[in-house]
Amino acid sequence: MKKPNLLFLFADQWRRNAIGFMNKEEVLTPNLDNFSKEAMTFTNAYSTCPLCSPSRATILTGKYPISHGVITNCKPNLDNVYLKENEITIGDVLKKEGYSTGYIGKWHLDDPEAQNGNTPISGAKNWDAYTPPGPKRHGFDFWYSYGADDNHFTPHYWNDSPEQIKVNKWSVEHETDIALDFISKNKDDNFALFVSWNPPHTPLDQIPQEYVDLYKDIDIKIRENVILENIIDHPKTIEPFSFTKEKYIDMVKRYYGAITGVDINFQRIIKYLKDNNLFEDTIVVVTADHGEMLCSHGLWSKHVWYDESLSVPFIVSYGNNIKYGFNETVLSGVDIMPTLLSMLNINIPDSVEGKDLSLAFQGKYIENTAITMCYPGNQNLIKTLKKEGKNPLAYGWRSIISKDETYVYFNSYDGKTTQEEFVYKNKEDEYQLNPIYLDKNENKWRGILRTWAENFKDPIFKK
Image (cartoon, rainbow, N blue to C red; front, side, top):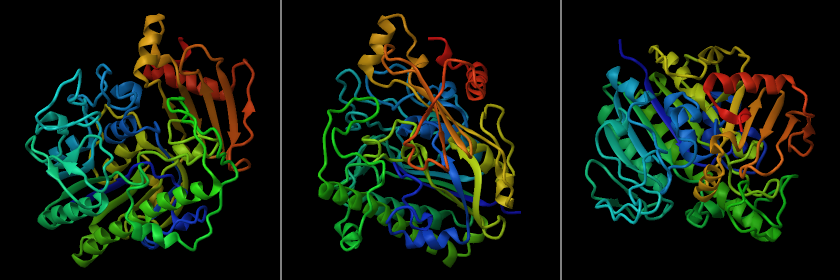
């Protein structure tokens, strides 16, 4: 009996509410809106760590960053921060199960090649890397990928040699072309394909104008928690800047335009599956590695516990094998691998730390929490903490998200700022403007976090 195929589509920096059918933002996604009618949407899906490399490593391994070791982005001058060859990923498992496996697009899980002034033969620069055939590809046989690069109009890729494949086409459209070719060549086999689109990740000036123009006459509402002066990122690694209201709305339209472009190319894949009688037998997952703040709370980018940064789409179809609609079960990146393997009727490796939530696809609500986190990632700050005899992994923040509340334990990044602890009421305080600060006494959330930290050897309480 032929096993179901797996098609895992994920974009970078795409927050959950930036989809039309969620009815929260003025974004145009007609194809995803239609897709949702024959799929299940998790309305409480979160990134385990709202940063590219840690989130991707967690999705692939089903393990927390503290366990797989990718605690920040893979970038130069950091020791040992990449996805190790001995980690068991979903790609490794699917290959052993006989699937034709493929990975297309952004990887960002390898040690950058341009370390210590090296000039690699692959031409990789800055955070980028060519990942050669072998164990670092973690079971993905077809490879059309790059490490980290944000040239959306002129992307490059590597296949099975260090020679760059340079392209003059919007990356989402080109990667969709490659995905369709892979599916066409493997449609008679069991295939498992991961497609990692970089947009709507910045820069937002590299969006085809035809998608931006769709928003020309749309009135964009500014979220109640947006602040347009002295904008920073949460770790404070960028210089403060400000937007006029007009400039900000233009930027949001570009962000939405990128998502519309993803939506249009997504439909090309769905059409092919349906035209070739593959849709009913393919588990299709649409998600993201993390969200985007877009100036909510005066913050840019991600790396913070707010909903705009942590929340992600998670929409799954599998023909008539699942119940359509919305499910409030809390799911995070660590739960994805065990849930998908269970749906594929494949044994879950003992190394996995997440929870199998596959019963949710039968319409059940499953009690669960998302434990999310960020660690210091700035190279100079990490060196300073170590010089002071402090463990950098004891700092940053940890969060526990239930259906009703978001608890945050923030231990600063620099080892000097006062520790803070607070809770948001998720439904009553949609924009997270009213944190409820907790005193120094033990509380139920801190107790849950303490148990988690002991189980997974996270030193947050051992600074």
